[in-house]
Length: 291
Image (cartoon, rainbow, N blue to C red; front, side, top):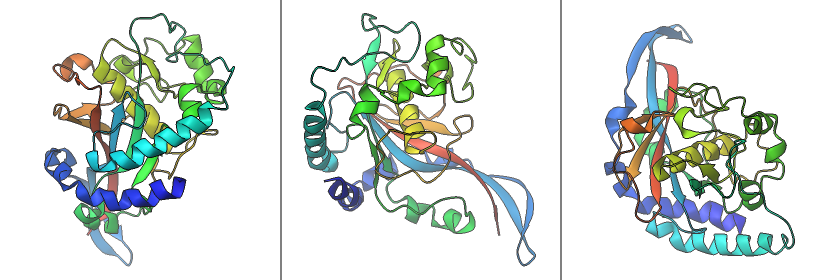
């Protein structure tokens, strides 16, 4: 079943060309920041740009999706995986917490999201020139990178995730309140809350912010950086920079560029989804020599 999801997803990606018209291509923000020389002595320019590398959705119901062509595949996979894994959890007490010392199941703002991470549709065609010039990206094989339903135990329970040293710091509250104006290393997402433990539960009064925070936790997991115990279908092929990368909300409302951890007052207005579903583009910063 895993391989069925992994490869069939690639075929379904070509039914999503309308997504190309939804994003703001101005967010590429191509800048020349210097000069360089490529072997054998060819002069070039150092270019910085943002690449729409990933398409990411969050949903409340396991197996649900914003992208209709993917629904039969994801819903079936989620149903089977959840059933199989849940059957082994009989009698297991599952702690529900968002990752801070103040998070309890009784809190009114506790929310949960499933996260699905895909390669951005047609990015190979759209950005083929940049990829040819910049050897900083591992070629992608599959369209589906990460489904939190497959990562059932860690995304809901966090059996090994809660033992991560950064989770221990988060539970201790050492990073709480730090760096509120933006992203504080990889421990705390500014106004959005703690990154660790990387689970689907998060306490925040905004549903849209909770979705954004779940996206960042999912990307951290899918990068395979310190993700022991998690189930990832295919690594995203690059090391994310949560300080320099950015998000763009394209459903249910277009947001423009959002810095990770950015104050919700500057972007969150009228973004509440009536269905609890959100669709994001993850823009990765890249710097390379082109000629």
